[in-house]
Length: 262
Image 1 (tube, rainbow, N blue to C red):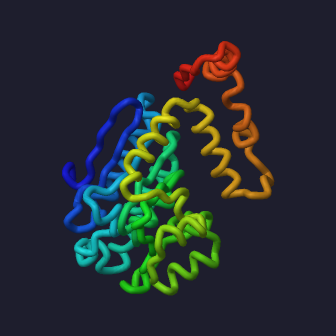
Image 2: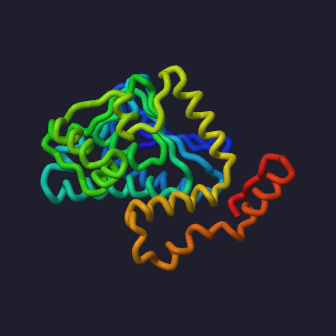
């Protein structure tokens, strides 16, 4: 498993890389469980300010769930439920991470790889990227969590098209429907993503964390009805923080702020 998924940390940025390039970086059952473990560990690491997810090689971000696993881990309904729980655990853990998360996408981003990308905050795609969820080509179903994330991004119409047609779409179409956040030239993908991550790593981590939580509340409850006391308090969660005072002082003193996450 250590070779299937790699982790590198430098200057406040963690990079998680799917590392089976000869097979288009599929994610095995054990891989989903490892993603959940890594996401939880990185979420608790105060030194990590931004997390990038990437695929090794030059062919794919990820071709999705490893079909070689299906005979063992999806052979009947009980096994399929356990497999779905592993996927849900991984994607939920990524979605809950307090740090901003970025997918660096090139080549194929399909099936479980595409579903994974929807659990991250930002998806930077190279112009050679291809997206899709061809579940109907395998006679498998997408779970509620994956469907929710995809629909939140692209709407029910585009979700229906992707799922029911089984077709792949190119990077520009993904950008048009909201599945990709930004599209850049393939040769610019690494530098662009690295620069974005570096800029974000210098921003206020409490603001990023609470902004993500507020956004999740809005997605769950767009009319903001019957908010819990904790949800009501979220917009004010950083009001008495050291970082708030540092941000104000730095602005007035015309210097870069030094945020600590406190």
